[in-house]
Length: 496
View (cartoon, rainbow, N blue to C red):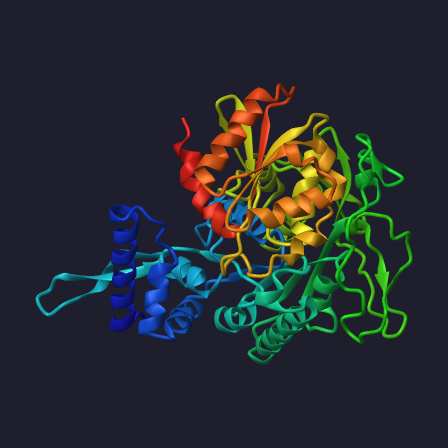
């Protein structure tokens, strides 16, 4: 299948619009050009997807509430390191327009094998990637899945997110499962083999995607030994409780009966053992699990006849990033990528701006983590406990459409547990007093809280407070919602 004249014109238009945005207006240019193309041609993604399918390009989709950007980027960067070309939305633009932009952006101008009537070689466009890896928002996953026909689908987890955008998490998962079932049946009917599903064994809603589905299933999880070096009876060496919200699946996603855990529920979410006594839906034994977390090294163990182990020193810290590595590793082994390449990639991986991003500025280590829901926020706050010293924090908290209009979710974040790790807080954004009230209710000293609507000034105040705080460890944590993250980038990069 070759590109038609309309598709070639659309590629030219995309390139032109992106050039104007990037070079002239100095703006990000991945989403808006795709948005304009979809206004002109509502079937543009479907038409390009047909061309990609005709070329036999395999597609990997990564979805979930938390961790999908990091997981998809780890997968894509490792594939690149193996020598293959990858089409992926590295900047986290995971709605339909962002995915379309990544696809069209992978076409490159090339000489055609044909000649025009004057005998001159014609120019054409060639898709420049060997494989497609796309992070996909949960809301648009069903539509994107039906268009791109992924061979591998990865789910990181499903937790409560912005209710005004997604509704109840069970409803979201139900729609995703329908899409997964449909695509698996289409592969079977077309004699195209079976799709592969990669899922966490410990998270009921994500694990439910594979329940009674005709697919090759790989589950990843954790062994109890992974946490023994950090936790004893639920308490870490710094005195912090390891207990976090375990799951949003109070009832069985299959039959709606109450689910129970056979283990003490006072364990962290990664050891959650669930079972429905009515229909039998239960935790699956992991095919790959993290078993050791010693001396900054993680060891993975495989469920085989003979034990097989893989160890690496992760570039990203935190239990939730260990889960991201597990998901990525599971996918990469399905692609037959060797362990040496994976190890090199995992140990040298660098996040994109805003996803566990670090930068040294004026002798301070600035840590930036996107926050958007209770579960993700809790995971980020837990990083504060990794240091025995208090830190300074900047919250950039807003309620624009991309952030979610409903800000009540911050009352589900356990700030009470982490307030004693914070020295000073500066709060900016459109809704700073909502956050200030939540922190005061958590027991934080109001004298340690500063509100500044101007984000650039708030960043400066945070750095000034960090200078005068005389802390032993010079770290600043910046925790923004999505739209504030985009605004922060130019300010952070502008600091000398």
